[in-house]
Length: 314
Ligand SMILES: O=C(O)CCC(=O)C(=O)O
Ligand SMILES: [Fe+2]
Image 1 (cartoon, helix red, strand yellow):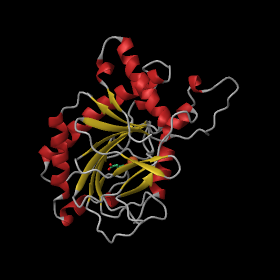
Image 2 (tube, rainbow, N blue to C red):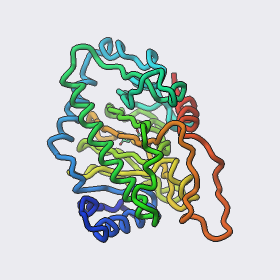
Image 3 (cartoon, rainbow, N blue to C red):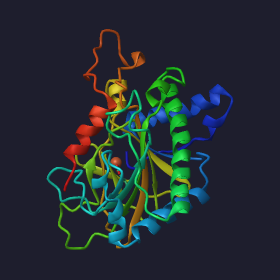
């Protein structure tokens, strides 16, 4: 496999179940391959993706001192600004050469069911940037709607009802990350990474990238496939919850970013992670007669908290 497939998603908006199943068949083939694919015709407009990428540039162009007024050290749920080198996604490599802004699901601290679970709480917003905030929140809303539809498609691809995953996504943890990768200097060293090799931790990721490139997806033992930007298409990849649901049939594939372009790179992943207290179980259609589940039960919040603490670089 040398390149990732491009799947036209428009059939998922059809009232005709056969059109939706046709999309699901393509998604299944891509998920059986390596769990990474491009999705086009999603209904999200080019105007909106251009605006949110411009918003990312605008934020990272702010003086460092302004960005640090919302440093994520002030958040108990990983929101706000993460400075350059704040994360090391690949053990043994250099800290990631990227800076980030994170925002996500906002629920009151005293929510009767979800209080105390990681990843719920207030966002941190830069002062005096209300239009900017509205742009980010609007894009996040578009991503949530698209993510629900992708989960319906995944359900169809696994021969279960389209609403099979709905209980996992009531008050789901979902986070939007704005990312800025400066160009990597020529003498940066062989273990320099924009984002070190990792898998994503939730259910699915919807990635918007600018026109620079640098994302690579693991293929086999040693190979990497480039996942260059394709105008009008998002990259979708499966996170660690999906092998748990499918008993390893669909994988959560390792990927990384190395920005050798000489240009500034901006990308915006949206992570749809599931409800914090949701414990995934193997989907019955993914177990052959007599086959046993390979994964022990683990809640979404426990998994995310563990992964977050193991990748903190400072
Ligand atoms: O910036 C990218 O292209 C990918 C980022 C990524 O993999 C992540 O944030 O999990
Ligand atoms: Fe990732």
